[in-house]
Length: 420
Ligand code: SF4
Image 1: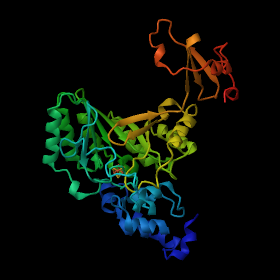
Image 2: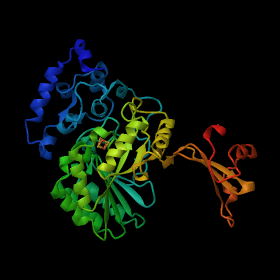
Image 3: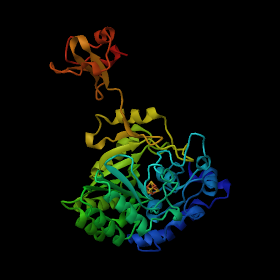
Image 4: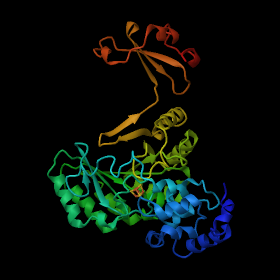
């Protein structure tokens, strides 16, 4: 459906939208990240740059989630004529975002219950999550931390951060600190410098991970000045990584590539944690295109998240089988470093688990053979257990009948249809 079909809703004409966009995009120094932030378009003002559908109009008025705001850069990646544009769906709330469904929760991962001090979650023994900042360049509609992000009451003062550092100092088992939020790179250079310096001084902290969407939503934020600061703390004492979140190949622009190259030159390895989102990237082809582009940007795939059960999230959720299907689709079509792990962060604070297609069929004990299905060809293959193994009882066993259907006489393959 094109926006011209919305002409009866009282929305601005497509020509007016184009004119408004052109005026906004030329009204300031485009690559100045501070100017981009100052010119963010918020709430119902987005109507000047999108011809709203009835569902988006309701979403903007009645969203139960975080604030609505986007950088001109991110808006410029959308096709104003296409109401199915994937980036548009991450910027504009829709009607589904106004409904708090019974299965949803403000804090499905129990991050608050696992928070010994304000702004810090200690779920895994050796890692903590540090909520550094409540602000972001764009407020993504699918944000799993919408209960805090964009809320000025959640602002982290320096004394709050200091209390977090003291907690980390008093827990020598913590080796890895994830700086998240909100977006840590929406803090000032001097604040980022202070946070990294503070972490670098804690003897047992060896790894710092920056969780940021700025390479996607505001790549100009990745300045040489910022990278010099990061590099100055990326030392023998502390290894700094970056995990970002590209969700669609349309986000993989030359500006994003430049931002990532700056981080790489500062010695920061960059990985991607996409979120599987209904109507945005929920197909094997779309995910393949995204991950091919990410490798061109020198970004390795890390996770593909199943969306959390946050308020108003029904519009984004896909069946669990969809993620498993996508991982199966990707295998064999792109190098392994371009295939994300499909992850479900278990509701109730159970931590992350990975889900994969059923490529391992089981163990045929009489022959001491494992049976696999090839992701590439769909054929069946067998491989022996080591003769001195003491772990034979730990495998799911397959029956003689199944074994006989899967060509037990050779180590080669048999056509898929013979088993199914
Ligand atoms: S940038 Fe990250 S923290 Fe901020 S709104 Fe988007 S998903 Fe949430």
